[in-house]
Length: 202
Image 1: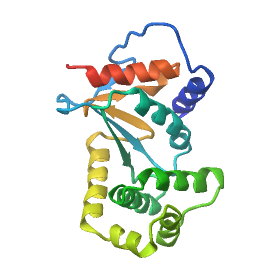
Image 2: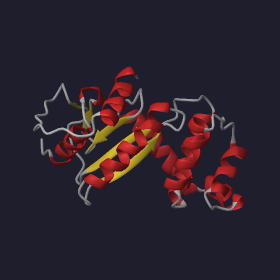
Image 3: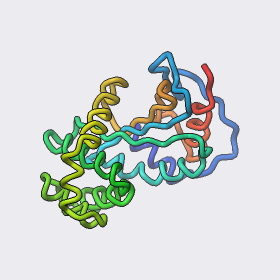
C-alpha cells in the first residue's frame, strides 16, 4: 500500500517526463498468465472502500483518454475489503454497470466514503445512492436481485480469485500482465507502460 501511495503522489507531482522508457519483466510488470486475451484490455481491480483506489480514479480516467479506442477498460470490484459490505458493494457496482450508471454511481460512492467520511452500511444506503444517480429505488432493487447482476458480480469474484488479487488498486493487462505500480515515476510513464503491455505479443 505504501508503494501505491508513493505512485499516486509521484504522478500528481511529476505529471510529465521527457525521457524514453524501457520496460522490463520483473521490474515494471509480471507475467501472471501464459495466454493473453484475444483483444487488448486493461482490467482494474478496486474497492470503493480503498482510499488509494479513490485517489487512483483521475489517473485511470487520464489513461482511458490516452489509450487507443480498441483497448477495452474494465473495472472489477473486489469482495475482500469491508467484511459483509464488500460483496454488497460488488453487487451494487455490477448493478450500476447493467443500469449504465457506473460512472455516476462510482463517483457518488467514493465521495460519500472518502470525501464526506460517511460509511455505507447496507442495502438502504446503496439504494439511496442509486436514487442520487438517477435510478428509481425499486428499479435498483430489481436490478440487484436480477440474474445478470448476480452473474456479473460472480464473475468479478472469479476474476479476483483467478488473478490472485490481494491488494488494490491492481491492473491486469490483456489478462496476462500485472503492472508493478511501484516502479512508475510519472504519469507519462504510467500511460506508456500500460500502452506497451496492451501491444505486447509475448
